[in-house]
Length: 414
Ligand code: ADP
Ligand code: MG
Image (cartoon, rainbow, N blue to C red; front, side, top):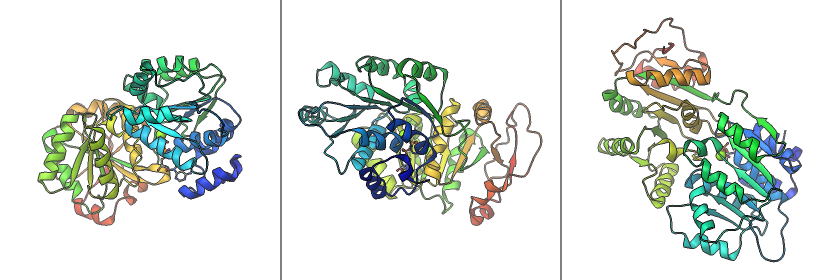
Protein backbone atom coordinates (compact mmCIF):
# COMPACT_ATOMS: atom_id res chain seq x y z
CA UNK A 1 0.00 0.00 0.00
CA UNK A 2 1.38 3.37 -0.98
CA UNK A 3 0.17 6.95 -0.62
CA UNK A 4 -0.78 6.80 -4.31
CA UNK A 5 -3.62 4.43 -3.50
CA UNK A 6 -5.21 6.97 -1.19
CA UNK A 7 -6.50 9.42 -3.80
CA UNK A 8 -3.91 12.00 -2.91
CA UNK A 9 -3.02 14.37 -5.72
CA UNK A 10 0.44 14.88 -7.12
CA UNK A 11 1.20 17.94 -4.98
CA UNK A 12 0.43 15.96 -1.84
CA UNK A 13 2.44 12.99 -3.05
CA UNK A 14 5.41 15.29 -3.54
CA UNK A 15 4.87 16.68 -0.04
CA UNK A 16 4.82 13.19 1.43
CA UNK A 17 8.00 12.35 -0.43
CA UNK A 18 9.69 15.52 0.75
CA UNK A 19 9.01 14.68 4.41
CA UNK A 20 10.30 11.18 3.78
CA UNK A 21 7.25 9.02 4.39
CA UNK A 22 7.40 5.95 2.17
CA UNK A 23 4.10 4.34 3.05
CA UNK A 24 1.01 5.35 4.98
CA UNK A 25 0.48 4.18 8.54
CA UNK A 26 -2.69 2.15 9.27
CA UNK A 27 -4.63 5.16 10.56
CA UNK A 28 -3.63 7.17 7.49
CA UNK A 29 -4.63 4.34 5.19
CA UNK A 30 -8.01 4.07 6.79
CA UNK A 31 -8.94 7.72 7.24
CA UNK A 32 -7.52 9.68 4.29
CA UNK A 33 -9.90 8.30 1.61
CA UNK A 34 -12.95 8.96 3.86
CA UNK A 35 -11.84 12.48 4.67
CA UNK A 36 -11.33 13.18 0.99
CA UNK A 37 -14.88 11.92 0.45
CA UNK A 38 -16.12 14.58 2.81
CA UNK A 39 -17.05 12.33 5.70
CA UNK A 40 -16.81 13.05 9.41
CA UNK A 41 -14.27 10.89 11.21
CA UNK A 42 -13.68 9.50 14.67
CA UNK A 43 -10.12 8.23 14.71
CA UNK A 44 -8.92 6.19 17.62
CA UNK A 45 -5.26 5.27 17.51
CA UNK A 46 -2.36 5.18 19.90
CA UNK A 47 0.13 8.04 20.03
CA UNK A 48 2.78 7.94 17.39
CA UNK A 49 0.54 6.32 14.82
CA UNK A 50 0.65 9.27 12.43
CA UNK A 51 -2.68 10.95 13.14
CA UNK A 52 -1.47 14.44 12.21
CA UNK A 53 -0.78 13.57 8.58
CA UNK A 54 -4.00 11.53 8.53
CA UNK A 55 -5.96 14.78 8.74
CA UNK A 56 -3.48 17.39 7.52
CA UNK A 57 -2.78 15.79 4.13
CA UNK A 58 -6.40 15.50 2.95
CA UNK A 59 -7.33 18.90 4.39
CA UNK A 60 -4.54 20.68 2.53
CA UNK A 61 -5.53 18.85 -0.64
CA UNK A 62 -9.16 19.90 -0.28
CA UNK A 63 -8.43 23.58 0.35
CA UNK A 64 -8.68 25.25 -2.99
CA UNK A 65 -6.74 28.50 -3.08
CA UNK A 66 -9.19 31.43 -3.08
CA UNK A 67 -9.06 34.95 -4.27
CA UNK A 68 -10.15 37.83 -2.07
CA UNK A 69 -9.89 38.21 1.67
CA UNK A 70 -8.68 35.17 3.55
CA UNK A 71 -10.96 33.59 6.08
CA UNK A 72 -10.30 30.87 8.60
CA UNK A 73 -11.34 27.71 6.78
CA UNK A 74 -9.62 25.15 8.99
CA UNK A 75 -9.58 25.05 12.78
CA UNK A 76 -7.55 22.46 14.65
CA UNK A 77 -7.79 22.36 18.44
CA UNK A 78 -4.99 20.69 20.37
CA UNK A 79 -4.49 20.44 24.14
CA UNK A 80 -0.94 21.77 24.54
CA UNK A 81 1.21 24.52 23.12
CA UNK A 82 3.89 22.13 21.89
CA UNK A 83 1.36 20.00 20.12
CA UNK A 84 -0.27 23.00 18.47
CA UNK A 85 3.14 24.18 17.31
CA UNK A 86 3.96 20.75 15.90
CA UNK A 87 0.70 20.40 14.02
CA UNK A 88 1.12 23.89 12.61
CA UNK A 89 4.62 22.96 11.47
CA UNK A 90 3.27 19.86 9.76
CA UNK A 91 0.64 21.93 7.93
CA UNK A 92 3.53 24.12 6.83
CA UNK A 93 5.35 21.14 5.34
CA UNK A 94 2.31 19.80 3.53
CA UNK A 95 1.23 23.18 2.16
CA UNK A 96 4.73 24.04 0.99
CA UNK A 97 3.66 24.30 -2.66
CA UNK A 98 0.45 26.21 -2.06
CA UNK A 99 -0.23 29.76 -1.01
CA UNK A 100 -2.13 28.69 2.10
CA UNK A 101 -1.34 30.53 5.29
CA UNK A 102 -1.40 28.93 8.71
CA UNK A 103 -0.80 30.06 12.26
CA UNK A 104 -0.42 28.47 15.68
CA UNK A 105 -2.31 30.18 18.47
CA UNK A 106 -1.34 29.34 22.04
CA UNK A 107 -0.76 30.94 25.40
CA UNK A 108 2.48 31.51 27.29
CA UNK A 109 3.84 33.84 24.62
CA UNK A 110 2.86 37.38 23.64
CA UNK A 111 -0.33 37.53 21.64
CA UNK A 112 0.75 40.31 19.26
CA UNK A 113 2.49 38.21 16.59
CA UNK A 114 -0.52 35.89 16.56
CA UNK A 115 -2.90 38.84 16.26
CA UNK A 116 -0.76 40.25 13.43
CA UNK A 117 -0.97 36.97 11.49
CA UNK A 118 -4.72 36.85 12.00
CA UNK A 119 -5.04 40.43 10.75
CA UNK A 120 -3.05 39.63 7.62
CA UNK A 121 -5.40 36.70 7.04
CA UNK A 122 -4.93 32.96 7.49
CA UNK A 123 -6.59 29.85 6.09
CA UNK A 124 -5.55 27.42 8.81
CA UNK A 125 -5.56 28.01 12.57
CA UNK A 126 -4.07 25.46 14.97
CA UNK A 127 -4.90 26.49 18.51
CA UNK A 128 -5.09 25.60 22.15
CA UNK A 129 -8.54 26.37 23.58
CA UNK A 130 -7.57 29.01 26.17
CA UNK A 131 -5.71 31.48 23.98
CA UNK A 132 -8.13 30.99 21.13
CA UNK A 133 -11.03 31.88 23.41
CA UNK A 134 -9.13 35.00 24.54
CA UNK A 135 -8.63 36.14 20.98
CA UNK A 136 -12.26 35.38 20.11
CA UNK A 137 -13.35 37.48 23.09
CA UNK A 138 -11.13 40.32 21.92
CA UNK A 139 -12.67 40.14 18.47
CA UNK A 140 -9.62 38.94 16.54
CA UNK A 141 -11.01 35.58 15.49
CA UNK A 142 -14.15 34.70 13.59
CA UNK A 143 -15.01 31.07 13.16
CA UNK A 144 -18.19 31.33 11.14
CA UNK A 145 -16.46 30.39 7.89
CA UNK A 146 -14.76 27.22 9.13
CA UNK A 147 -15.18 24.29 6.74
CA UNK A 148 -12.92 21.74 8.44
CA UNK A 149 -12.70 21.27 12.17
CA UNK A 150 -10.27 18.88 13.85
CA UNK A 151 -10.34 18.06 17.55
CA UNK A 152 -7.01 16.40 18.25
CA UNK A 153 -6.17 14.42 21.39
CA UNK A 154 -9.75 14.71 22.57
CA UNK A 155 -9.18 12.47 25.57
CA UNK A 156 -6.39 14.69 26.81
CA UNK A 157 -8.57 17.77 26.41
CA UNK A 158 -10.89 16.03 28.81
CA UNK A 159 -8.12 15.07 31.26
CA UNK A 160 -6.82 18.62 31.25
CA UNK A 161 -10.21 20.11 31.98
CA UNK A 162 -10.56 21.87 28.62
CA UNK A 163 -13.71 20.15 27.54
CA UNK A 164 -16.04 23.04 28.34
CA UNK A 165 -13.79 25.53 26.57
CA UNK A 166 -13.81 23.21 23.59
CA UNK A 167 -17.59 23.00 23.61
CA UNK A 168 -17.87 26.79 23.77
CA UNK A 169 -15.62 27.14 20.76
CA UNK A 170 -17.52 24.49 18.81
CA UNK A 171 -20.73 26.48 19.30
CA UNK A 172 -19.20 29.21 17.14
CA UNK A 173 -18.57 26.92 14.19
CA UNK A 174 -21.02 26.65 11.31
CA UNK A 175 -23.22 23.54 11.44
CA UNK A 176 -22.28 22.65 7.88
CA UNK A 177 -18.67 21.63 8.27
CA UNK A 178 -16.55 18.51 8.19
CA UNK A 179 -15.43 17.36 11.61
CA UNK A 180 -12.62 15.01 12.57
CA UNK A 181 -12.10 13.87 16.11
CA UNK A 182 -8.94 12.04 17.13
CA UNK A 183 -8.23 10.41 20.43
CA UNK A 184 -5.87 7.75 21.75
CA UNK A 185 -8.55 6.38 24.06
CA UNK A 186 -12.32 6.62 23.96
CA UNK A 187 -13.71 7.25 27.44
CA UNK A 188 -17.49 7.65 27.72
CA UNK A 189 -17.36 11.45 27.82
CA UNK A 190 -15.54 11.50 24.49
CA UNK A 191 -18.00 9.07 22.94
CA UNK A 192 -20.80 11.37 24.08
CA UNK A 193 -19.04 14.44 22.74
CA UNK A 194 -18.45 12.81 19.39
CA UNK A 195 -22.14 11.99 19.12
CA UNK A 196 -22.98 15.63 19.62
CA UNK A 197 -20.44 17.20 17.27
CA UNK A 198 -20.13 14.69 14.41
CA UNK A 199 -22.58 13.78 11.69
CA UNK A 200 -22.66 10.15 10.60
CA UNK A 201 -18.99 9.68 11.30
CA UNK A 202 -16.82 6.91 9.96
CA UNK A 203 -15.22 5.24 12.96
CA UNK A 204 -11.65 4.20 12.49
CA UNK A 205 -9.81 2.28 15.13
CA UNK A 206 -6.26 1.56 14.14
CA UNK A 207 -5.38 -0.31 17.29
CA UNK A 208 -8.13 -2.81 17.99
CA UNK A 209 -8.07 -2.54 21.78
CA UNK A 210 -6.76 0.99 21.63
CA UNK A 211 -4.68 0.37 24.67
CA UNK A 212 -1.56 -1.68 24.09
CA UNK A 213 1.57 -0.31 22.59
CA UNK A 214 2.77 -3.40 20.88
CA UNK A 215 6.24 -2.36 19.89
CA UNK A 216 7.33 -1.40 23.37
CA UNK A 217 9.25 -3.81 25.59
CA UNK A 218 7.81 -3.04 28.99
CA UNK A 219 9.10 -3.96 32.41
CA UNK A 220 8.52 -3.12 36.03
CA UNK A 221 11.09 -2.51 38.76
CA UNK A 222 9.77 -2.97 42.25
CA UNK A 223 11.70 -0.41 44.27
CA UNK A 224 11.21 1.61 47.41
CA UNK A 225 10.42 5.27 46.89
CA UNK A 226 13.70 6.43 48.44
CA UNK A 227 15.75 4.23 46.09
CA UNK A 228 14.17 5.37 42.86
CA UNK A 229 16.80 7.99 42.15
CA UNK A 230 19.69 5.55 42.66
CA UNK A 231 17.97 3.01 40.44
CA UNK A 232 17.49 5.62 37.74
CA UNK A 233 21.19 6.53 37.81
CA UNK A 234 22.04 2.86 37.61
CA UNK A 235 19.89 2.45 34.51
CA UNK A 236 21.27 5.63 32.95
CA UNK A 237 24.79 4.18 33.13
CA UNK A 238 23.79 1.83 30.35
CA UNK A 239 25.29 3.25 27.14
CA UNK A 240 22.08 2.23 25.37
CA UNK A 241 20.25 4.96 27.33
CA UNK A 242 20.88 7.68 24.79
CA UNK A 243 17.66 9.64 24.85
CA UNK A 244 15.58 9.02 27.89
CA UNK A 245 12.22 10.51 28.71
CA UNK A 246 11.50 10.27 32.44
CA UNK A 247 8.04 10.87 33.85
CA UNK A 248 7.30 12.13 37.33
CA UNK A 249 3.99 12.75 39.02
CA UNK A 250 4.48 16.43 39.79
CA UNK A 251 6.27 19.50 38.45
CA UNK A 252 8.14 19.78 41.70
CA UNK A 253 9.44 16.22 41.45
CA UNK A 254 10.42 16.81 37.82
CA UNK A 255 12.46 19.89 38.74
CA UNK A 256 14.12 18.27 41.69
CA UNK A 257 15.00 15.11 39.79
CA UNK A 258 16.54 17.08 36.91
CA UNK A 259 18.66 19.05 39.40
CA UNK A 260 19.79 15.90 41.16
CA UNK A 261 20.78 14.28 37.88
CA UNK A 262 22.73 17.36 36.90
CA UNK A 263 24.60 17.17 40.18
CA UNK A 264 25.49 13.61 39.25
CA UNK A 265 26.81 14.99 35.91
CA UNK A 266 23.98 13.55 33.88
CA UNK A 267 22.73 16.27 31.52
CA UNK A 268 19.03 16.54 32.27
CA UNK A 269 16.27 19.11 32.00
CA UNK A 270 12.70 19.31 33.20
CA UNK A 271 9.72 20.43 31.17
CA UNK A 272 6.34 21.16 32.64
CA UNK A 273 3.51 23.63 32.51
CA UNK A 274 5.13 26.17 34.84
CA UNK A 275 8.03 26.81 32.49
CA UNK A 276 7.82 29.60 29.98
CA UNK A 277 7.10 28.63 26.42
CA UNK A 278 10.58 29.70 25.36
CA UNK A 279 12.19 27.58 28.06
CA UNK A 280 10.15 24.55 27.05
CA UNK A 281 10.92 24.96 23.36
CA UNK A 282 14.63 25.30 24.10
CA UNK A 283 14.67 22.29 26.40
CA UNK A 284 12.92 20.23 23.77
CA UNK A 285 15.36 21.32 21.07
CA UNK A 286 18.35 20.41 23.24
CA UNK A 287 16.83 17.01 23.92
CA UNK A 288 16.10 16.42 20.24
CA UNK A 289 19.63 17.39 19.28
CA UNK A 290 21.10 15.08 21.90
CA UNK A 291 22.64 17.83 24.05
CA UNK A 292 20.58 16.69 27.00
CA UNK A 293 20.32 12.95 27.46
CA UNK A 294 17.42 13.02 29.86
CA UNK A 295 14.22 14.96 29.73
CA UNK A 296 12.12 14.85 32.88
CA UNK A 297 8.49 15.58 32.19
CA UNK A 298 5.04 15.59 33.66
CA UNK A 299 2.16 14.04 31.72
CA UNK A 300 0.75 17.33 30.59
CA UNK A 301 4.05 18.65 29.27
CA UNK A 302 4.80 15.51 27.29
CA UNK A 303 1.44 14.88 25.76
CA UNK A 304 1.63 14.53 22.01
CA UNK A 305 5.24 15.65 21.78
CA UNK A 306 6.82 14.33 18.68
CA UNK A 307 10.27 13.39 19.80
CA UNK A 308 11.99 11.04 17.46
CA UNK A 309 13.95 8.04 18.65
CA UNK A 310 13.45 8.18 22.39
CA UNK A 311 15.44 5.15 23.50
CA UNK A 312 13.71 4.68 26.84
CA UNK A 313 10.66 5.92 28.60
CA UNK A 314 11.07 5.61 32.34
CA UNK A 315 8.10 5.97 34.61
CA UNK A 316 9.86 7.26 37.69
CA UNK A 317 6.39 7.48 39.19
CA UNK A 318 3.53 5.37 37.91
CA UNK A 319 0.59 7.44 36.70
CA UNK A 320 -2.63 7.21 38.68
CA UNK A 321 -4.60 7.43 35.45
CA UNK A 322 -3.94 4.17 33.59
CA UNK A 323 -4.47 5.75 30.14
CA UNK A 324 -1.52 8.03 30.88
CA UNK A 325 0.70 4.96 30.98
CA UNK A 326 -0.26 4.15 27.41
CA UNK A 327 0.34 7.74 26.31
CA UNK A 328 3.69 7.87 28.05
CA UNK A 329 5.16 4.69 26.68
CA UNK A 330 3.83 5.62 23.25
CA UNK A 331 6.64 8.20 23.17
CA UNK A 332 9.17 5.45 22.60
CA UNK A 333 7.49 3.63 19.73
CA UNK A 334 6.79 6.33 17.17
CA UNK A 335 5.59 5.21 13.76
CA UNK A 336 6.54 1.59 14.04
CA UNK A 337 9.92 1.90 15.77
CA UNK A 338 10.36 -0.25 18.84
CA UNK A 339 11.22 1.08 22.24
CA UNK A 340 11.81 0.28 25.87
CA UNK A 341 9.68 1.35 28.79
CA UNK A 342 10.71 0.82 32.42
CA UNK A 343 8.39 1.59 35.27
CA UNK A 344 9.35 2.07 38.89
CA UNK A 345 6.74 0.86 41.29
CA UNK A 346 6.89 1.39 45.03
CA UNK A 347 4.56 -0.24 47.47
CA UNK A 348 2.08 2.65 47.28
CA UNK A 349 1.90 2.41 43.51
CA UNK A 350 0.87 -1.24 43.34
CA UNK A 351 -2.74 -0.25 42.88
CA UNK A 352 -1.83 1.92 39.88
CA UNK A 353 0.04 -1.02 38.40
CA UNK A 354 -3.02 -3.21 38.79
CA UNK A 355 -5.16 -0.67 36.95
CA UNK A 356 -2.61 -0.35 34.16
CA UNK A 357 -2.33 -4.10 33.69
CA UNK A 358 -6.06 -4.43 33.50
CA UNK A 359 -6.30 -1.61 30.94
CA UNK A 360 -3.61 -3.07 28.69
CA UNK A 361 -4.93 -6.57 29.35
CA UNK A 362 -1.57 -8.08 30.04
CA UNK A 363 0.82 -8.39 32.94
CA UNK A 364 4.02 -6.39 32.66
CA UNK A 365 7.27 -8.30 33.02
CA UNK A 366 8.98 -7.78 36.36
CA UNK A 367 12.73 -7.28 36.58
CA UNK A 368 13.43 -9.93 39.15
CA UNK A 369 16.93 -8.92 40.18
CA UNK A 370 18.35 -5.44 40.38
CA UNK A 371 20.53 -3.60 42.91
CA UNK A 372 17.62 -1.74 44.52
CA UNK A 373 15.07 -4.50 44.86
CA UNK A 374 12.31 -3.56 47.22
CA UNK A 375 12.18 -5.82 50.22
CA UNK A 376 8.67 -4.73 51.07
CA UNK A 377 6.30 -7.44 50.02
CA UNK A 378 3.08 -6.39 48.40
CA UNK A 379 -0.06 -7.29 50.37
CA UNK A 380 -0.46 -10.53 48.41
CA UNK A 381 2.82 -12.03 47.30
CA UNK A 382 3.20 -12.66 43.59
CA UNK A 383 2.55 -16.20 42.52
CA UNK A 384 3.76 -18.06 39.47
CA UNK A 385 7.02 -17.10 37.89
CA UNK A 386 7.36 -17.53 34.16
CA UNK A 387 10.04 -16.87 31.67
CA UNK A 388 9.63 -13.59 29.87
CA UNK A 389 8.63 -13.75 26.22
CA UNK A 390 11.63 -13.58 23.95
CA UNK A 391 10.61 -10.28 22.46
CA UNK A 392 11.01 -8.71 25.80
CA UNK A 393 14.60 -9.76 26.27
CA UNK A 394 15.88 -9.49 22.77
CA UNK A 395 15.21 -5.77 22.59
CA UNK A 396 17.75 -5.10 25.29
CA UNK A 397 21.40 -5.19 24.47
CA UNK A 398 23.31 -8.29 25.51
CA UNK A 399 25.73 -6.08 27.38
CA UNK A 400 23.11 -4.40 29.46
CA UNK A 401 21.56 -7.73 30.29
CA UNK A 402 24.88 -9.06 31.43
CA UNK A 403 25.52 -5.99 33.55
CA UNK A 404 22.49 -6.01 35.71
CA UNK A 405 22.01 -9.77 35.39
CA UNK A 406 18.34 -9.06 35.37
CA UNK A 407 16.07 -11.95 35.68
CA UNK A 408 12.84 -10.98 34.05
CA UNK A 409 9.76 -12.75 35.14
CA UNK A 410 6.06 -12.29 35.04
CA UNK A 411 4.31 -11.50 38.24
CA UNK A 412 0.77 -10.49 38.66
CA UNK A 413 0.95 -7.40 40.80
CA UNK A 414 -2.12 -8.26 42.73
P1 ADP B 1 0.14 10.84 16.58
O1 ADP B 1 -0.55 12.17 16.37
O2 ADP B 1 -0.68 9.68 16.17
O3 ADP B 1 0.68 10.70 17.97
P2 ADP B 1 2.11 11.93 14.79
O4 ADP B 1 1.23 12.44 13.74
O5 ADP B 1 2.69 12.93 15.73
O6 ADP B 1 1.41 10.78 15.62
O7 ADP B 1 3.28 11.09 14.07
C1 ADP B 1 4.28 10.47 14.82
C2 ADP B 1 5.60 10.43 14.05
O8 ADP B 1 5.47 9.58 12.91
C3 ADP B 1 6.03 11.78 13.51
O9 ADP B 1 7.43 11.88 13.68
C4 ADP B 1 5.67 11.72 12.05
O10 ADP B 1 6.52 12.57 11.29
C5 ADP B 1 5.90 10.26 11.73
N1 ADP B 1 5.06 9.75 10.62
C6 ADP B 1 3.78 10.03 10.38
N2 ADP B 1 3.34 9.37 9.29
C7 ADP B 1 4.38 8.64 8.84
C8 ADP B 1 4.55 7.74 7.73
N3 ADP B 1 3.56 7.47 6.90
N4 ADP B 1 5.76 7.18 7.57
C9 ADP B 1 6.78 7.46 8.42
N5 ADP B 1 6.68 8.31 9.48
C10 ADP B 1 5.49 8.88 9.70
MG1 MG C 1 -1.14 13.66 17.40
